Length: 178
Image 1: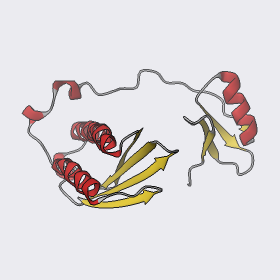
Image 2: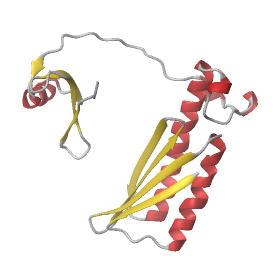
Image 3: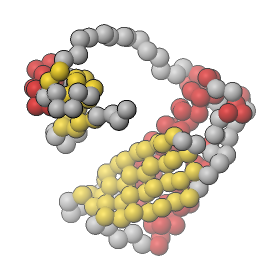
Image 4: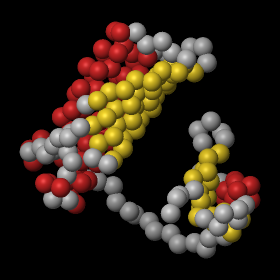
């Protein structure tokens, strides 16, 4: 795996770099081709540190992020998240795509945990009328409905967009390119 480290307001030492490389190497078992990992290290305030790892493999992306008071703890918190995402993806793909088309290493049937066989499924489907509104009106409607996101046609560009509430209390806007 190719690992790239990017720091923002954080000085990583050689020891931390070695720990990150060693611990990320345990993800190599999931990939048959070249995978790339982008590790972003940053300081939040004065006493918190964030580690974000984005792994690109076979045209897919897995990403996890954690914040704690110790960067060494972050690697131990973020790796299980990434590993769970990649294993879940692999199991889902193994059930849908022939093994030779998969960009991941194939494992024997015995090593797949029984819990992985119970993949999530669509349990509800909803249809609704979509309205042409501005971003501000979409945010107001989302708050009135007490939802975390709202799908609408943006009056400014006539594209389907999604406005959502971020963890920090601000809002995000997703507008797909098509």
